[in-house]
Amino acid sequence: QGCYAVTPFLFHYGILNCHSRYFYITKYNLLKSSVEKIAINMLNKGVLKGEKVALILSNRIEYILSYFALFYIGALPVPLNTRWEKQEVFNVLQDSESRFIICEEKVGNIVFGKYIIEYIATFDSIEKVFYFGSNLYGSIGIPFKSLTDESSQDGVALETLDPDSPAMISYTSGTTGIPKGVVLKHNDIVKISKYTGAIWADEDDLPFSIAPLYSAQGFLSLFINFATEKCFTMIASFNPNDNPAYHVDPAAELPDH
View 1 (spheres, rainbow, N blue to C red):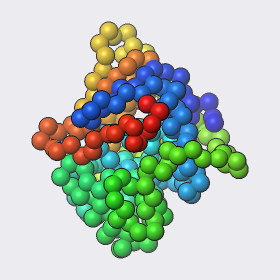
View 2: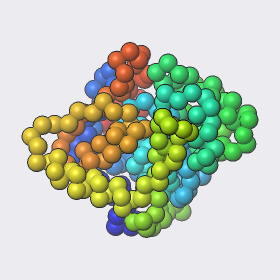
View 3: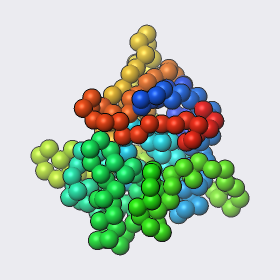
């Protein structure tokens, strides 16, 4: 990997503490191992460098694993706002040219599974849907859990990443018009994480994040917190009126926790 690729840099740091209703605690060496498994399995499923992968998830451990696995590959995460309605979701999927989706069937009160089914039926562009819950997507549906299985790395190679190559596409909220995609480079994320993290590291308080991981505040806080070398905590839902979208089962999802 290039020296400024996001994931190798951030794995030099810290401990993560992430929970939904139940605490889910993991250490960096276990997190790194899980990310590498997911990256290899995604490569074997056709997620290659430069592919755009839409993420429709609540704040959960698999969101974090997906970010870093895609960074490892050189594929671009495209996090979607989980408060968008169907047409906004459709617009962003088309505009970003996402061919892969990682999604929960329902986040908060919105059943995104129905949106994805309709999108697949309308546009012939989605290669795979990595899903949580039931398979609503036919032959292109793959359970996300299968991505955490051990897989042979024979014949699978991660490509070198240029520091100035795109790392992800973040869409604006659409307050003043349709959401617009903003491309962040690997070097951008590393610098923000490193230099802001150096300032945060001087504080004695431990961070607690309620921001959604699809938002700039959420994912940049995540990356900066990794670079502080401290433990930090996140919650699954940032709206107290939402029903919990998913209860993380550490034993089922990631046994090495």
